[in-house]
Length: 289
Image (tube, rainbow, N blue to C red):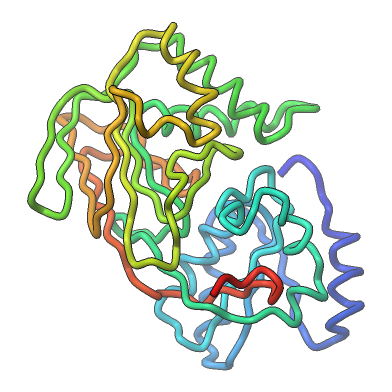
């Protein structure tokens, strides 16, 4: 990110852990994945905390999937940390509290397998992926917060030709084809700095939630976005929602696809639920029975 909050965080970590921890700094894109996998490969029981935003968490997650000796913790010092909004929009401080994290409990959560990658949160294609791509540019600007960067990226995207022509395949059976503003596959409720694209999504229920939004006018989009952010969009006539175990997006040319904010370009992305795939460290007070 554009600010370095490591000094204060390290003081807190050492206060509660002393020398019983290892603090690693990333040096560039992909480095968090490499470092996390190296720690996982030791075979020791270990908690690896991703200190950053959704991008840092995405890298660490993809370095440790499949290692049963590892638990994933999240210290949310990034601009969005959208996955944690499942536990409540005002719960960020509970995850920032190192004492809470030290004595937190591990719970098994579902993941999305999207091609060769794994996601905790959401996969999307179309306008939202374009926004996520542009958001990185705006986040670098002074005084621009994560949510502000998202809104600025939305404005930029609205100036482009809207919509993607795509075929959506749900659970390998149901096929729908059309031109969509965007399509989303979700394991948790929020993305984009707090937009509730899938308000009923639950990373513990063994299901994915999907959403498609037909192409609408720019005027309608401006009315749609506040409803979308509040999670009050699902009954709108141009929105289609459902539950599934896998969700595939097929297009005739490569389009941007966002995996927890990380962008790839592809003509085909298949998202599959992987049930109880990773151990997640959660402050005990936030555990939901």
